Image (cartoon, rainbow, N blue to C red; front, side, top):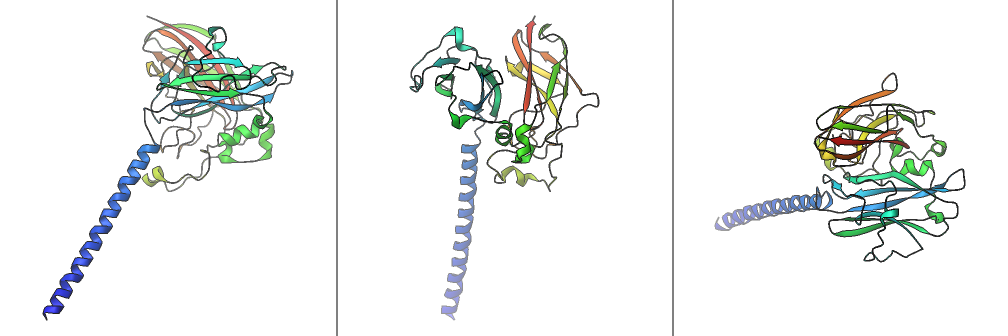
Length: 334
């Protein structure tokens, strides 16, 4: 009887110990998962790196170099004026491989790069044309954030040659399609109404209007498949190497130069960078559906500035695979 009692107690203790062990292991997994998410989804405090995306030939014999950037933060923006922390330099091969070297020259520093940096990946954001005799030279973009120097090296090496289909693949266009038809895709047509240089007072609404169209309707519009949804999608593993977005003409305004935090658009503009978090108001975030274009192909908005200064607004028309940009320069006074 006594042995049965002790056997029962011992068996119960083992069960309790096993249960506690499982609970501790589960708690450890939760903590490790939370730490992993913290490591891989840093909201702020991380760097921004410039990126050379590739090149293709122009019809006149010159070449077009494509640049973008990766802000490894999910929420932190940066404002970096053209200067010793945000500049271009044309050099001989490998001349600026040493990141401690500084070759800032104001005369050549500005190649149309942004000074406002949104979070996450912003690919194929701007282009720089170089002459037919560019040869083996390098067009180097230097960018310094969080005390760290990073560089992108624009070059005409054959491995970096791209075409419209490559761009579509890199941005997850047409839900990641690899269709050869995208090699002949034509970017949207975009026209900003009004002057390219404008002046407005702080707090005074500035009216914006553009007309955009997709001349070849390629890739054809289709909506993201509607799944069951749910919070669990926030933590689902990625289904492809790049974030995917749907096809279809769309338009949005961004702040290209100047403090974005001092601007307010009405209506709110969806994000043009790859924020993949659920309900992030980004074409790369589920369950976002590409909005239908206005019937007359004319997009209107207003923007209000809270601080005086020089701003550049960039309008971006996209078919989901290729992009067309137009800028408006705005002087904001008191």
